[in-house]
Amino acid sequence: MVQVPQSTFVLPVFYLPAIPILRMLFLSLLCIIIIGGHQVQCLNNGLALTPPMGWMHWQRYRCVVDCKAYPDDCIREELFREIADEIVNNGFKDAGYEYVIIDDCWASKERDNNSRLQPDPKRFPSGIKALADYMHGKGLKLGIYADYGTKTCAGYPGSIEFLELDAQTFADWEVDYLKLDGCYSDILTMELGYSLMSRYLNQTGRPIVYSCSWPAYQEPIGIHPNYEKMSEVCNLWRNWDDIDDSWSNVTNILKWFSDNQDRIANYAGPGHWNDPDMLIIGNFGLSYEQAKAQLAIWAILAAPLIMSVDLKNIDPKFRDLLLNKDVIAIDQDPLGIQGRLVMTRGNIDWWTRPITPVIQNETSYAVGILSKRVDGYPHRVNFKLSDLGLKNPSGYKVQNIYESSIEAEMLKPNDTLLIRVKPSSVVLLKATILDEQI
Ligand SMILES: *[C@@H]1O[C@H](CO)[C@@H](O)[C@H](O)[C@H]1NC(C)=O
Ligand SMILES: *[C@@H]1O[C@H](CO)[C@@H](O)[C@H](O)[C@H]1NC(C)=O
Ligand SMILES: *[C@@H]1O[C@H](CO)[C@@H](O)[C@H](O)[C@H]1NC(C)=O
Ligand SMILES: *[C@@H]1O[C@H](CO)[C@@H](O)[C@H](O)[C@H]1NC(C)=O
Ligand SMILES: *[C@@H]1O[C@H](CO)[C@@H](O)[C@H](O)[C@H]1NC(C)=O
Image (cartoon, rainbow, N blue to C red; front, side, top):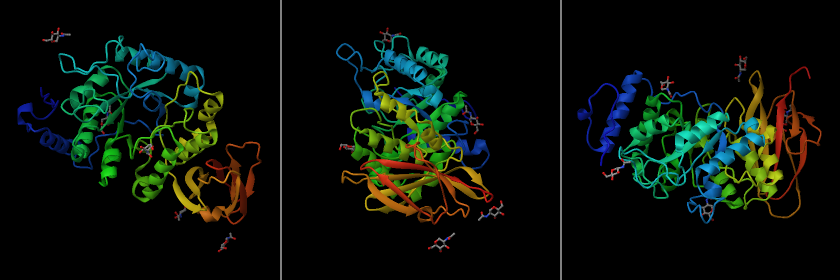
């Protein structure tokens, strides 16, 4: 059956074109008119002023639904409550991790008799509203997953004919974050469709972080999505392929981000972020050094920090890494400027990100030196800050974030800096701008 989106204002339903895509076009034009002829500004929800931080089940838990065989791993309400408890009890909440996000495979295979999505009754017997209440009671927020197409990627009910109804359902459940995936959909209609969903979320009156997946479907088939529009209607968007549990996945994603940085980086800022996908730290595929590298470069990219790991059994070393407040502070820097790859030498990449504090026109910087080398010793490299475009004449106080025992150095732009970087690891520096007087 076809759900006709009810426009809550202006026009009676029967004026709306019956074909969904025309209806979308029509409604998205209304959006412009109503806001008064400015750019389409459906999203102004005041959320995600720094990159969202939280936890999402997909990378670690996928679509395990057999709770008899896999009681510790299956997607059910207990998992999310337990993860919330870990987030609160082990310092993650204090470190800034806030959103507990349900990914695919939460829903019943059928909508209810009013066409509303409903959770699987065996795995979520208390319902999603109760889970949202649980999160809110702990000072956390709940995220949920839906799909812009006819089915979710794992085959659960899609939202294409029910966008408005689903937005209202999520708001009624007091959900705080929506990831809208794009399987089984007409990729060419995504700009319109995702924008329309943004407006439906807005109309519910509930502030809901909106995570879009539209570039992740358009970029791989060679379409350059409209990032300008995206940054107006989405709080974050998945640009590229899904991350799996391996170092090569991390380096592939970084290669895509650097290859395309001139096209995408400027669209990141407070309220709207490029999303290179989840942190895989603490799982099976990354060594500790590689995990440090993922966190460091994600922070330089102003990426959402969404963990996907068994927080009940995480190795304390990885837990402490995820709690590293200096790296998190770089990620959450209030300027919200996405960093870039600025230099490559001998399979070592230098990434920089302008951060606070700022003196007059000069910012401080985070500098990530990422080694993709495999010659098993800490490789020696020297460089000057001026090689990276850091040129404040009074210089910088340079701290090694992961090696706090190394004393900070005061360096002028042309001073030579000598470091050693381990294979498939990172050195993360913070270069704090110095005043003339110092
Ligand atoms: C909806 O959009 C308007 C206009 O941009 C904005 O002022 C308002 O805060 C938004 N409301 C929500 C709940 O996102
Ligand atoms: C939904 O409708 C079906 C078929 O009409 C009916 O058998 C079922 O009891 C209804 N379920 C609920 C929850 O009302
Ligand atoms: C991750 O690795 C898998 C297996 O090699 C591959 O299929 C997938 O495309 C990779 N994704 C990225 C983003 O590199
Ligand atoms: C630097 O800041 C000063 C004072 O705020 C301003 O007059 C000047 O135009 C700025 N220069 C650049 C290059 O932005
Ligand atoms: C730094 O070195 C460059 C090139 O060697 C030179 O042009 C520049 O004047 C030097 N800057 C300072 C502050 O010494």
